[in-house]
Image 1 (cartoon, rainbow, N blue to C red):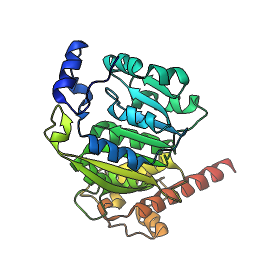
Image 2 (image 1 turned 90 degrees about the horizontal axis):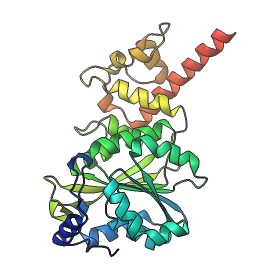
Image 3 (image 1 turned 180 degrees about the horizontal axis):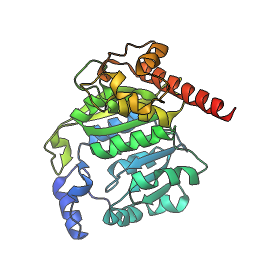
Length: 295
């Protein structure tokens, strides 16, 4: 089966109609029809021969094709059965040789199983993602202490701004902290609605997440809980928001004194390192309580 012209909305539309397919709004499907943008994003990934790459939501394979041409091994996560059938035909030879594999279904439900089943771990990650998928996936991978060498996402521009936001700014949120936990986050190419088909109502932006030299290595699941707890009520101070996570024998005042952080701060004014300090202190206290209970 021949690939359609990925830069032509009319050809993509005709191809889908001929295949008896309709775009599924529920999956947030849009094709990137800007060739120079596709090539730039792939170059940013700095792909190497034989390394394993994950792609989330390949659609008709416009980025898939470029990733495979680099010589990298590729596992794609696709939920749409129509796209799965087409991808199997487009990349039949690569699948046969073992360079290409399709993981069918919801990436949020099956990424962990896929990670554990493959002895080769993914180095790079690419996805053109709706916000709800990006936010959940990033939180889930952090909980499992999984950090990729490099991730490149294209997301709504406002979501990109949140991912890279600095403390004390309006866009700074739990999502910002989670993205910056193990990665240096950099905003890249802005993509107007004309870069996609069907045209979205908002602009998109590429976000580059590069693994930090010394990523956080403590209790990652607890870290995610701390971040969400401290941002749970933005108007409240951290001494109020931390209470559900503290044991009865320690006050919030005493806890933050141990952390060296003012109890009257609000979450949006804390740096990522502060959240790590709070999480580490909480982990130490929980471990101390456990040792005392066992004694």
